[in-house]
Amino acid sequence: MAKSKFRTIYCDNCRAEKKMQILSAVEGAENKVWHKCSRCRHNFLFDTSIFEQKENESKELNRETCVDYNPTKSYKVGSSVYHADWDDMGFITGKEKLSSGLQSIVVDFQKNGSKRLIENLQED
Figure (cartoon, rainbow, N blue to C red):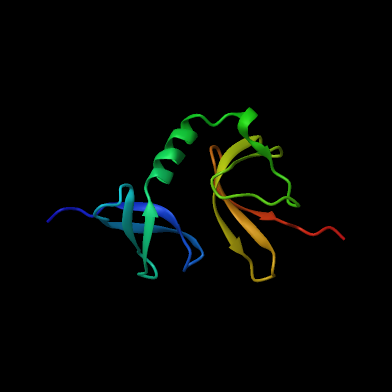
């Protein structure tokens, strides 16, 4: 029996980064692959070219291309950020809405690993 392949991806249903099983490719659609979340068991169709782009970007991560992190700003998944207090750079892998109503981003840092940071914080 062949081993299943897995990939860690942001699950929209679980609202967290989860391990997903790679199921099958879509016939006639290049770079489209079905994945199943190991927690909620929902199936998702992902474009694998995004993963290839992320792998290439992770090799090329440098300070000049990163945006400085500020909790009042809004960020896009896939962009790179620099956290000045930690002197660390990373890619945004997902977004979450917290129970308090605040929004957060999930950043995969080079030194500190995966961390959740606040975004769109309203200043009074």
